[in-house]
Image (cartoon, rainbow, N blue to C red; front, side, top):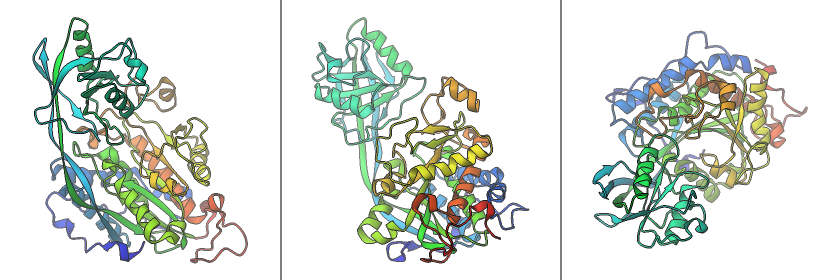
Length: 504
């Protein structure tokens, strides 16, 4: 990291802020040299990670119930991460940037006839605004049992100036909304296909105002439509403000600076809740890994940790970081050997998911950089060695590794699931409940400390620590680099041993 494009954090003054917990200290017995897989896995305890989560919960409780980017809760979260790292011996830096934050001004759905009632609706990210007072029209659904994923689904249906109502499923929210808009819809309502509210994104600026509603409300409206017209008014308006926020960066003092292993997690929550699984869990797991990694006497490759801001607003912090390197320091970007991403690693109805870089289960909708398969194998080899079942999760680029892979940096990561429904096959591997989502409290006020599965967090925290240490010692399978630990100096006698055999 270059100080020319970052701002050094000051002393850890945040301890005096109201509601902020002191940084968690290392556990007794973990003060040695955790220089192999067994030792680092033992050092990064679930209790240590939970201490950080408790601190993040306390911060949210003291700051309007959230830790969203650009808020006092985010500022306090950054202070906590910095103070914990500084206590472990790291120098920390902030990388500031400005983003456009949306604040909901109006978010209402009123049924006007045949009955009069208010229905809970959530404006989708990237939805355009309605006029003040909203859009009024009759509800219109796709023909038959179609899901609005093709223009043909609206054959024989007149959407002009009306409001489309569509079930979730088969294609993205953005596709449904775009097709309905092309067919003349003045607005779009998408209802969930599982129990609960629907908080979604169009993925890019849309053409028609779009909201999500619950499965129960959607089905009730569709049932009413069978008996005649249903007229509604949808009022969705969002204000956009320029907001400053920051990434938190820290790196080990040891190891090659031209063969850097990056480890990242987003620090921000959504505005609706404290974000303890999403993504306090990733934040806390890499924070405790950093604390324990600082005790290792010898690292061959430098490890750079990043806590990203504004992920919930569109992967903005990580994208800013990579774009800044592309524009100002391409050589430093080239020095990144691989990137590890951890976004939700303690889901209550969890899976043990590894990003599917080799596309053995899911075809990747993005280009997979060379070295990503080998990075994936660091995780899967560890799980296999301890008899831990795991499954693939799509290498989709839909988290903070996107900017890295777009620029050819290998990547992998772990994921315990969000709003996908758990299958019977997953229950057989990991327990839990089939037919409900991996995290029923995803992006909601319920994503608090009680939403965390400690067993999943323990499994994933160990894997994060082991993978980080393994790559800190050897990236030769990923990029052919062999190092004795001195910056820019290749090892004269071939590959460095894996971390299990590393010298004290």
